Structures are given as C-alpha cells and as structure tokens.
Length: 317
Length: 273
Image (tube, rainbow over all chains, first blue to last red; front, top):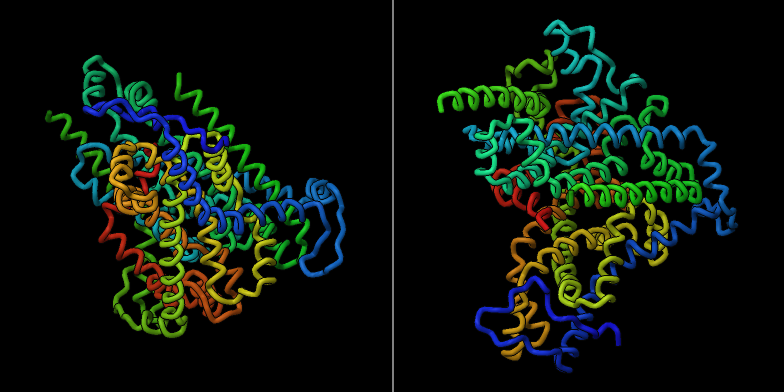
C-alpha cells in the first residue's frame, strides 16, 4: 500500500548523539504509522463539512439561476459570468476591490516596515511604542469602523483639526464624497493593520545580525544600502507573509465597508464582498452571487500563487 | 557615540509624534464616552465634567452582558476544539512522508485560499435543513472548519522542526501512538499552541459577518453584532455609542495589556518556518 511507504524520518533530523544506526522500517512501525492516519479524521470532518463541500456546492450554484428559495431552478451555463462582465455594479465593485487591495497592501507594508525599522533601534520607549502601534489590531473591526465613521463626519474631529491648523481647504465629507470615500475606508484599514505588519517585520529584523550591519557601516554603507543589501534579503519571509495577509484582507474586506457606507455613496465603495452579500441575502440572487464568489476565489488564488512564485525566485537570488 | 545618541533621540521624538497620530482615534473614543449628553463642545476638546453614566446606560440598553457571554462561549469552545483537532491532524501530516500525506496536507491548505464567501450560501442552507440554525452551534462548527487549515499549517510547520527522537523513545518504552502524542508531542507544541489560541481567539471574538448572518433575529448575539444593532437603534447618540464600543473592546484590551509579550510573540512567531 502506498500510504505505508515510509521514508526514514525527517532528513534534517540529526541521527547522531551516540545512537546506533536508525532501525529499519519494520512491520510494527508500519502499523504504527497507519494508525496515525486516524488522527486526521476528527479534523477532516469539520473541514469537509464547512469548507470543501459548501465550496463545491457554491461553485455549482454559479451555473444556475437559483434564487435561494424556489425549488425550481435550472442550469444556465455561463450566463451568470457573462452577466457579471456586463454589469456596471459588478465591474465597479471589482475595480474598487482592486484599488483597495493595492492601496492597503502598499500603505500597510511601507508604514509597517518603517515603524519596525524605527523601533529596531536603541530608542528607550520602543516597547511602549510597539504597544501603541499594535493596539488597533486587537480591536473589533466593527468598533473601529464606527469610531472612524464619527471621525470622518463633516463636522468631526479630522476636519476640525485641519481647520484649526489652517488647512481648512483639505476638510472634506470623507465618507460622503464618492471621489474619496474609498480612500477614506482604505485609511481605516491601514490604521488598523499597519501595526500587524510592523510586528511581523520586527520579528524578521531579529534575524538580521548586528555585526553584519556594523561591518557594513565600517565599509561606508549608508542606511539605504544597508537596508537593501543586508536587511531586505533576510526579511524575505516576513515580506511574503505580510503581503499575503494584506492582499487577502483587501480582497475579502467587508466589515469596515458594511458598517460605514454599505457600499455607498453611489456604489463608490462597493467591494466584491459587500456586493455579494447584498445580492445573496437582500436580492435573493444566489446563482449570481455564487458567480461573484467564484471570481473572488480566482483572484485570491491567482494572487497567492503568483506572489509565492515571485518571492521564491526573489529569495533565491 | 555622541552623534549616535543625538540621532536616536531625534528618532524617538519623531516616533512620539507618529504615536500621537495613531492614538488620536483612541483619544476621541475615550473622550466622548465620558462626556455628558448635554456637553456640546467640540469632540477634540477634553471633556470638562467626566461621567461614567454612559457606560452603565450602554451596558443595560445594548444588553452587552448576554452578548459577551455568547462571545466567550463561542470563542473558548471553538479555540479548544481547534487546538485539539489541528494538533492531532498535524501529527501524521508532519511525520508520515508518503505522497498521500503531502496530498492530504495540500488538500487542507487549499482551504487557506478559498474565501468563505464561496460556501457561505450552501452552508447556510445545509444548516437550515438539518435544523440547527438559531443557536450558537452553527458558529462553533463554522469557526472550527474555517480556521482548521491555518491552525494545521502552524502545527505542521512547527512539528517538522521537532526531532522524532522523543516519540521514538516513547514508543520503545511501549507507548501507543495516542499516548506518545498526548504525553510527549503535545507538551512540546506549547509555543505554537499559544499562537494558535491567540490568533484564532482574536479572529473569532472579533468576527462580524458570520454571526450577523447566523444569529440576526435571534436572542443569541455576539458582541460585534450586539454593538452593530445597538448603534443602529441609538443613531448619532455618540456618547452612548462610544461607551458601548469601549465596553465591547475592554476585555480584549485588558487581556492585551497583561499578555502583551506572549500576544505579540504569538502574532509574529507563526511566520518563522
């Protein structure tokens, strides 16, 4: 049986320290190993029930005109998908989602990395500062969204501060103006999660050897050249994780939009997730919104694969 | 050396300003929550006559107590199940090096890429058909299934770095696979268990969309949904709303301040693989 064909243990495992050569794979060990498969069963059941089966079903619904209630439905082939590319609402939501993803990913990572570099020095208050920057991460998104909804109101704190420092010209109806509402929402997410990126970069920076940096400084390397040649290659795993987290968060964004604007004004902040939720649970367009979620899945998967390969190549160089 | 100190100090000054910018929303939140309703001065100005009345009012009117109870039960049960199920499943996945095992591993990892939205509607229907809607059970099932791939990933990564020697010694001493897992392997997994608990606990505690969908219209609400409903009803009474918001995040913030070291470690240790 294939599942019993065991290679020896982890090749990285040191075998030495006085032991004799490792025992060859005996039938007894084989039966132990096959026993182990049972350990997977309790996890497989909820995973299949919650993730695998519904996702397959959901993909199936994407090719039907089912409304969620009516027992009569029929296969409509690719109609939902062709409709999607003629639907200005769906195209708008797609565009908004992509803009949000790009803005959030860049801003979170640039800010997070700068904060991490600043705190990875000898400044005395670094523990307190780390705490402050990280705090928004643990706050419930719904709470964050309501708080910012108030902060963004036309007579709210931001505009007041702007007016008081003589920048009244910049005061805006942040969430009410279709031209800027999307960026205002991106601002909320960036405030919330830059500290998360910072923490992961800080962990990555711990692996950067101090003596290498000092040696580079003695060789006359400036801060930028030190960053690029020594720190950046060692940060590659942290960068991968952070980009992945930001991208997925951006694609799936729901709470911050649903609480503040519900996709408005004039659909200017509609994302794939909010459009999908409205179509499925308010308009009863199950088939169509299943098609939307298939598109969302494809985006996440494509980004994940591309990014993984790209960073793998970059890391090896 | 002197130049270095000067530069460090000016960096520190810049960071203080950045920190103040970060704290500005929190300041507004606290400042308004302690403000009497008849105080109409600017939200930026410090509140002159602070009161705690908003907190008691918000607590009673938003029925946050029950919601908090539900949130605690859902979070604790789901996280406990996640730790148990995913550490158990990680064991064969990390130790068996056949192609079936890596196939199973990738099967679980696909779950990391599939957005929950894809299965949202069919799953809701299945839950309705088997008649468990209305309580908190569907949410626990959902969180366990949904967070399994991620938890499993963390456990497998960690287990692969632990040498097999301990388990082999245990099996030579006559332990069954289950015994050697619970007595030898599971205790060794403690650091990563911490990470799994923290990340999943926070995710589940803060989650909004699923309880909104599964619990709306029932008396069992979670904290985010209760806050959402409350704000809808007390539109623009911001003092009351902000008091409710603070009450909603207080438990996590308190835990955060006490456990900050391990919490921050938990957030960052998942990535060293």
